Figure (tube, one colour):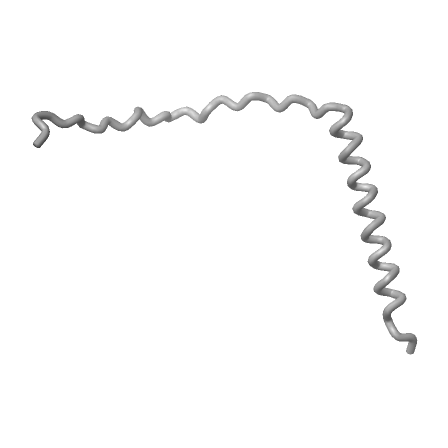
Length: 59
């Protein structure tokens, strides 16, 4: 049987919100990649729409 024990002490509660650091602007390369990805995504959507319209039977 232990002769002593440690009392668990909780950390003090912070009342003020944590200071947030401002975000760094994104690099040029990241912006270029985002633009290419967005264009590619839009092109794929247009291709899917064209396929869907072709699949519909004519009335």
